[in-house]
Image (cartoon, rainbow, N blue to C red; front, side, top):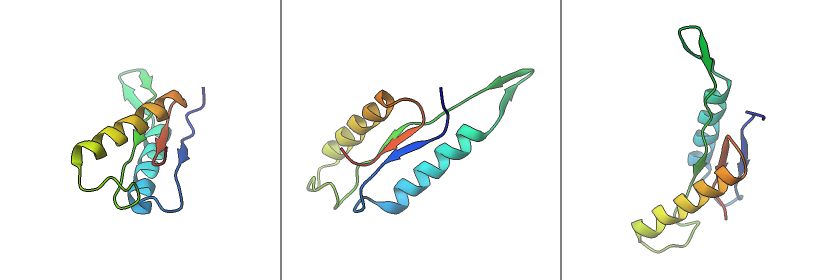
Length: 86
């Protein structure tokens, strides 16, 4: 299974947040974590919701729910995914 990060976003998404999340997932995926003699591979998946792009009004619970839905969509796509669009 590939550990190369993949991403799904739109041109209107919160670019800086997405870029930072994607860059973090790349760094983690390519880092060699060790515990004694054992090498451990770690990947990160994430879901991003942002205003005003997602048009959710001022509802923090709706933002969290949308980010959570996107996180699970990222996980369904495989490891090392960041999604900021539906």
